[in-house]
Image (cartoon, rainbow, N blue to C red; front, side):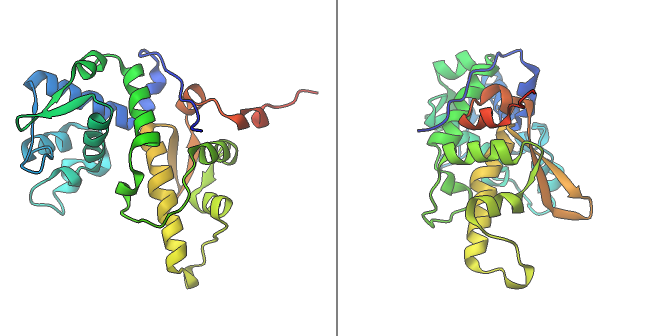
Length: 243
C-alpha cells in the first residue's frame, strides 16, 4: 500500500520547496496565455516552447545558459523536468493532445490557480503512477516500494543522510572506488534516479553539498514540506520521549 500524501493549503509557503510544482504552474500559465502549446510530429512540446521553458523556469541545471553549452537547439528531453511534467499532465488528465497542440483540460484549468491541490495530484502521479524506469532506462527488476523508501528515509535522513549511507541502508552496498562493478552501479543509479530525484524535484528532500570540491556527494535533508505532506508509520520513532 502506498503512503498517503496529504493536501497542502495553496497559500502555504512550504510549497515553495517544490521545483516541480513551480515549473508546472508556469507551464499552465503559458498554456492559458497562449491557448495551447505546440507539439512536434512525435507529440513532444515544440522547440519554441522548450526554448521559452529553458529561459523562464527557475531551474539552474536546465537553464538556457547551461543547456546551450552542449546543444545547438533544445528539444523536450533536453529540459528534463518538462519532459517528465508533460507525461504527468497526460497521465493525470490535467492536459491532453488535440489537433497537434497540448491543451489544458477543464480539470487542469481549474487547478491552475489551486497550487495545493495541483501539488497533491502531481506528487501522487509522479511517485505512484508514473513509470520511473523512464528516468534511467534500466530494467533490472529491483523491487520498488515507496512505503519502505519513505519510512526508512524518514528516520535515516532526520539529521541528514548521504546517498552512500542510503545505498548501504537499502541495498547493503558500500562504495569501493577500486572495485565498483555493474551491480553496484545499477543499484546506485536506481537509488539516485528513481528514489532521490523524484523526492528532490517534488520538494520533499533538499540536497546539500558535503564539500564544494566534491560535487558527487551530497547530504539529503527532509524539508518542511515532507513533514506537512507525509504522515508515515516511522513518525512515532522520531518523537522524543520526555522524562
